[in-house]
Image 1 (cartoon, rainbow, N blue to C red):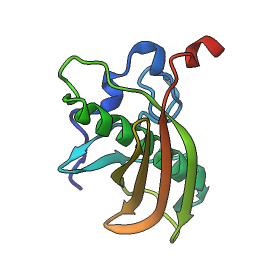
Image 2: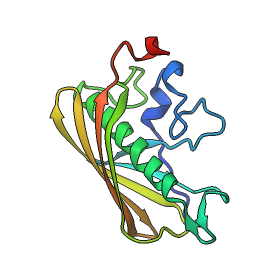
Image 3: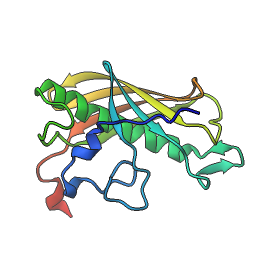
Length: 162
């Protein structure tokens, strides 16, 4: 099987204070390390579920799928606003950081374990600080889950609330 990966992920650009998310934070040693990048005008994240991320033998736990959709959505929103602001991952500019306002997931069929999952996103701006991302999760080219994330720009005071 060909290894799929994102070369220029938006999560690689987040400042250290914002890189601890269990789903996509590069600083979280126990996290999933989802990495979201561009594939043309759509966004993509690849993920190979760990051996213990099971619902039952042979199938991926739905919470992992929901987490993938969630982080893919916020990463996609960050990519879209970063591009709108004239930047791309890797150009040295800190991207905007988003948080989830709404997450909706529909499980279409059981997701087989042992396959690389591919999340594909399409981004729609619905407000200058709010984006809606439609996501499909595929395994071997078959859609296993779909979702919608409404992501909002993280307020500057977010870290002060710790």
